[in-house]
Image 1 (tube, one colour):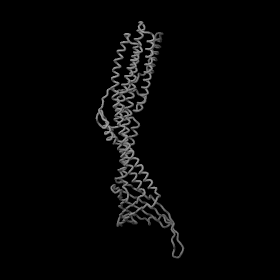
Image 2 (image 1 turned 180 degrees about the vertical axis):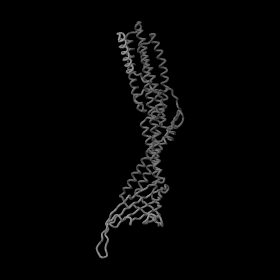
Image 3 (image 1 turned 30 degrees about the horizontal axis):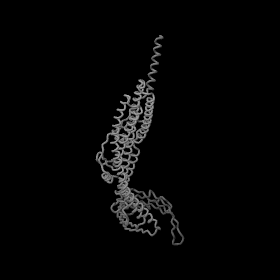
Image 4 (image 1 turned 30 degrees about the vertical axis):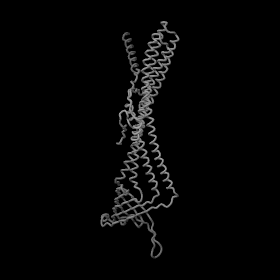
Length: 506
């Protein structure tokens, strides 16, 4: 092998190794931020939020409880093998005519199956039952088990029976009504929690947006300070500006850079908190977008209060709570009430030693029984329990009254906050425009030597403050509008009711 070829091979090997290293350790490009609107964030949260998933499971539970209660209206059937088998050995003591006793063992084996078909009667809280039974009974009066066939009998039985509670409330209908109220309350709770989540997302969204814009404002101030510092350096070099003025400009630049650094750190913290709120991975890159323009809404306190009293689900929840409390009072009173039971039965039965003869010549079997249970005394234990339930019911009624007043106060406060934010938006917008014009004029004066560095720095601060105030005012307005929407369940921008879709198909 020639030396030239050896050197070439060495260079090729080195080149391949370098390419391999570059390929393996190639730095990854920065992740492109995910640009999202408020609607995008809400949609993601509705899919990923743990709270929403918990609420859906609560709805599933209430829905299934209601289905179970309504199913109690329908017929049901069961097959019971009461003796499979039932074996007994007993000793009999038989007196003799001549005196004394004769002892004998008796072996019994019973096989029995019962088929029940029940049909509840919701209107009366009674139950019709059709019962079919089949029994085989083997007995042997001696000690020998081999002669069991001689003592075998078969007994089929078909019975129609009815049971009816007397002098009490309809427990079947009450159970269904309680399940219906619980489902309605779960749906109301789901709606409220979803609205609360949407509100929290809206607040977090605009806080993050404000943090983004604050970084932009602070970055703009850094550029302005840098520009003023550059101009000051040039004027110093030309002998038109004192060194102390340049030092002041440099200090202003350092302060602006420090403010920007703090704003960037606050932005990252807001991003992490917001991603956790809507269910995104912490490592995801996120940027929200929204407009600073706003549409003033024309509303009155009376109209907002009227909408809240018409649509707030808490008012319906209070009604449900009161009705459930009334049911609890009835159920507690029923624990010591006079109870009656009507039991009627008509059946056909037979018994024969051969199974082929067991289904012939049936005899009838009928009975009607009315029972009554009368409580005598319990040292007022039930009376105290009833009074406790009545106190709880009264407390729920008082809570309903308080809720009615609280909602009105909340809405009135929300309307005042919205109107205050609206005025501040108009004022701060005017201030920002004036501060922007004044800064440009001051910068020209500084370049011409008609303005000191301190006066220019003052104008920079005024412009930054005006921009920040306008940003805060717009964000406060949008958050106040979201708060009013949550407290009235009415969208005053679109002039329509806020609808929350409650899943109904589980």
